[in-house]
Image 1 (tube, rainbow, N blue to C red):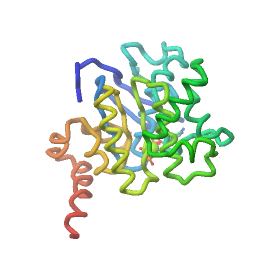
Image 2 (spheres, rainbow, N blue to C red):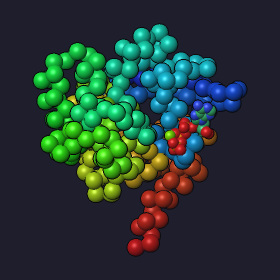
Image 3 (cartoon, helix red, strand yellow):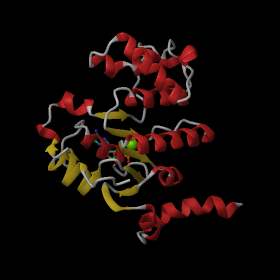
Length: 252
Ligand SMILES: Nc1ncnc2c1ncn2[C@@H]1O[C@H](COP(=O)(O)OP(=O)(O)OP(=O)(O)O)[C@@H](O)[C@H]1O
Ligand SMILES: [Mg+2]
């Protein structure tokens, strides 16, 4: 929820182009500290690109993205990324690192003591439902897709960053585990006051997690509001997404 109206991230007139073609354009919005903003949109609508503009994997072609009030281009890249946990669409685990080393990566880079890292890694593996005794020593190729995704979530949480970017992190999970981990994330986000930007094309997931929903279409953010506001939106793209929610019920 919007706890104290402090702005964590602000997009000011942002356009990002590649080969003179804008991938996202005219982005103007703020993400408040402690909120869970879900970016919803069909494939290719610009969700991942928007995410990458936050942690400076991309820099705006026009306009600016401010993180804690300072444009990302003025941030030291390493310092910026340490403040932002990132779960990427393809999990991005290091294949030659064990689960334990993958999850402990940022704490290691930050110079934590080995004992401290181990206990943090084990705590996180429990949190994402993976028994450390069974999984800590395995390598990513020895895991199922859903297990890899959970390791990716644990890794992003490891050093306790204030902001989490999660790009379709639960796509490979079965619906039961997915619901469980959605609930866990929601609780975590509320208890720890994390700012979460969560990308999905699944409207049901958006409704479970969001304090606000941002709907992207053709590289633009066309609707941004609470779930109620989203339900009332008359934009054809929101109506199309809302219809997906209803169509399941209609078949029953
Ligand atoms: N590095 C790049 N260079 C050129 N075009 C790109 C690049 N990355 C993405 N695109 C294009 O930009 C558009 C938006 O891509 P983006 O990855 O942001 O979509 P998305 O909403 O995350 O989609 P999905 O749900 O499939 O992950 C797409 O048309 C894509 O082909
Ligand atoms: Mg994407």
